[in-house]
Amino acid sequence: MHFYGVYIVFLNNKNMGYYINENSNGMKLPDCNKADYLILDGGVEVRCPKKFVRNLICVIENQLFDAAGYIYSENELKLFSDPKDPRPKRWIIHPNAAKLANYNS
Image 1: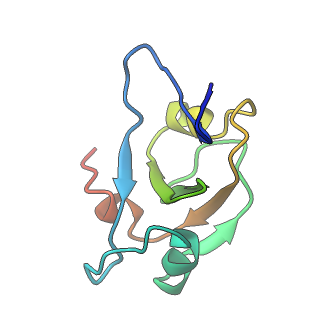
Image 2 (image 1 turned 180 degrees about the vertical axis):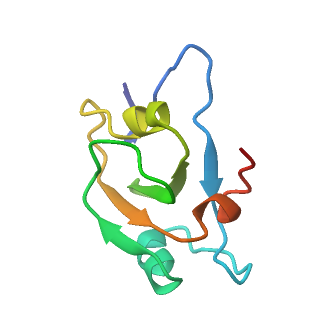
């Protein structure tokens, strides 16, 4: 569903996961170009994987801001890589992805 240029996903009242807003040094990431800053912070850009891989971040490039989501499971990968979601996405493998997202498995 589109609403004022933003893609909204309804997932049976499940909020999509863990987001990254700071780099490894604790500095706030800018609202846009988050993927570039995560690469400068030690990340590597990859193509969207077909299977879950550890330390994966999906940066969704909305028009007004970027959202850097931590992909912590196969299900989360499916949600973020939904082909019905038309927003541009960049995929980053970052050695500290879980820590940056404050994720505890």
